[in-house]
Length: 411
Image 1 (cartoon, one colour):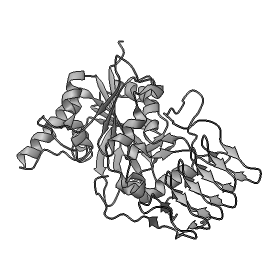
Image 2: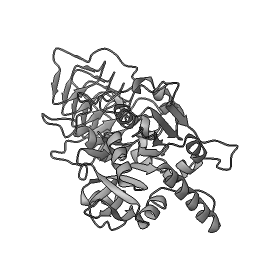
Image 3: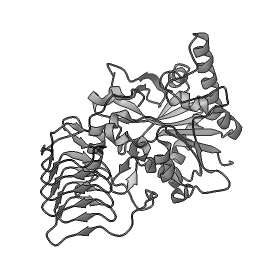
Image 4: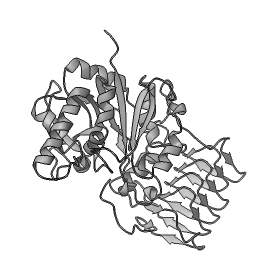
């Protein structure tokens, strides 16, 4: 049988407002992760390791922050003349002008490109989750099922299911019901925002959704695929699940971002970012090994390239080029690239953004033994336009500084 033609579309255009200060000046997929990577590296590496070399990235907010990281696609072996990396932006001059308002709208605004490419299967993934998955296996299962869409599903904490599309499936894998972000979820089996679509069916459903919107007299913004495309395919009996029993975590909130980093720690971490045969690839401007001083104490932690630790780091992730000065202590926290923790400072159950200076004798967060994503009160210290905070600065557990002026609902 001839190889299946596949395009992988990474939806990287959400505003990411739930990450607050971390996405004030960067796209959500460009947020640093795991002591040397960025969130979008997960989807790009999964595609590359799956043997998929035709990858499109749909971006929108803070495009420079993401474009600088993507470069030509070389770190993921996507700098090719045939296929390779294609970055798609909002545009003007067509009948689908302007910013998109959701995942279906993003696909609709680029449907002319998809129609011209005409792959047999379109793999659509988000860029704000951490997992390891062979997209080729997904596509093969999809082809064998004769479905219009195969949804990757996974189980989450019952109290968290309402953040996702909740599914009910039959014993043979058919999706019987799909409810998008329900107020009262019926179960903990959710869609992981990873899909294999039969391209012709996807385009037909996008066109039908656009006609329905126009008939109602509204504009042509289609919202999310969970609003229209997936319910329609499910109701027609054309949706199936592909169960993912391995690690998967959406890191699109402050607490889940913090918890996702804690998952990387311990003698037997819940998730390892880079394993033999399935490398997590990235483009990095940092080089050289991390360095520890004579009096440094480092336990159960990850240190990125070029990090310098002269103080104490316990059960934490310290990004590339970050500095923890002598007399400072970091515990159960995430220090992003280039941040500096000055002497005498204490950082506990917190996230410190890239380039931020934690001043001398500051107190950021507090220790919370046994904290989880659902219980932690994570302090978030972002960049301050007014400059370095004063010595002795205090940021209480669960607080954010600087506070958001407003919240963009487009996440």
